[in-house]
Amino acid sequence: MVQFGQAKVKLANQLYTLEFAANDQQRARGLMYRNELCAACGMLFDFGKSRYVGMWMKNTNIPLDVAYISAQGLIINIEQMQPHTLQAHHSEIAVRYAIEMNLGWFAQHQIEAGDSVRFISAMPKN
Image 1: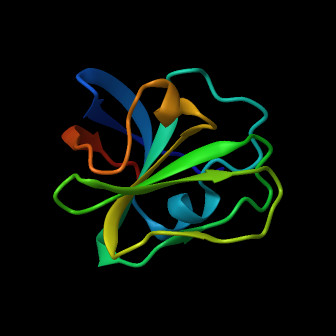
Image 2: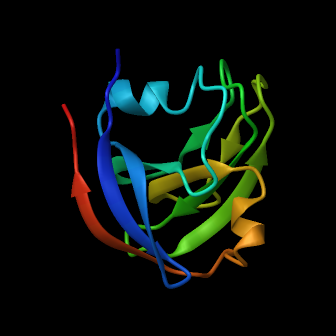
């Protein structure tokens, strides 16, 4: 079973504790096979260095938003993704991070491209 670390991030002046995917196995698994995600839950993906990133929803049961984030913490673009689709949703430029939350979460919290994410702490799990 894949286990994830934890990361604390600040979005729109609120602190959130997210699951943290920092290695290939964790990033490949992501939020697959889950049937629900609590309202304030999500996952931070760290790709180790900036690169173009694409996400898909294979084996993912819940609709998600993904925010692509630069190494400096700037949200580049946010994409909406539907369950069990194979369409890739890409970052507009090379990014270091991505955050997945429930579908519509970023809009509900008035968070959009151009906003900043502050990374408070990260505890990876190997």
